[in-house]
Image (cartoon, helix red, strand yellow):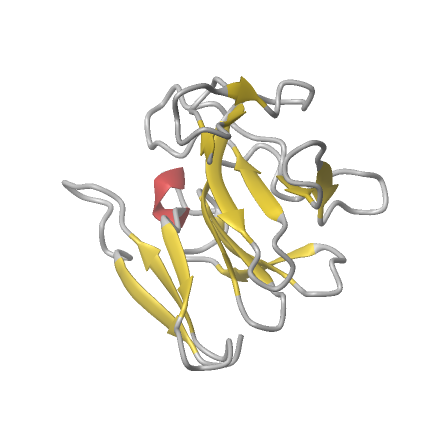
Length: 176
């Protein structure tokens, strides 16, 4: 079992939760917002940044992947300089399509990483990029619709009210 905490890192239990050992302490942040297993290769992905909407939530440093059962992690989708466009964001959820594309629901829109693993690209901006307040950009969940071969992806924008809820709802993409 794996567990991620708001600002306590990633943990692993090999005995159904009786004992836990830290797995993410050597990484640049201990703030975890999402954990997901990529079904195409079984790798563990960690989205950093506390996935709460409070004013004191800790931002993350991007998304990391482990291909060795959580023993080590490497950043995913960083640019040539090693910087992730998801740094300083919070990641609410990670989903995968059958082709190996990854989707990250963040506090600044929905991002996609193609299966070739180059860079993250923003694919859904809920409101104008300069809109204030910032929470109108929050995509709080993402899922690939089963049975569509990855051609349909649903994102959820769900900021709490009152006010600033005009973009709330389900967003369906049929063109990835």
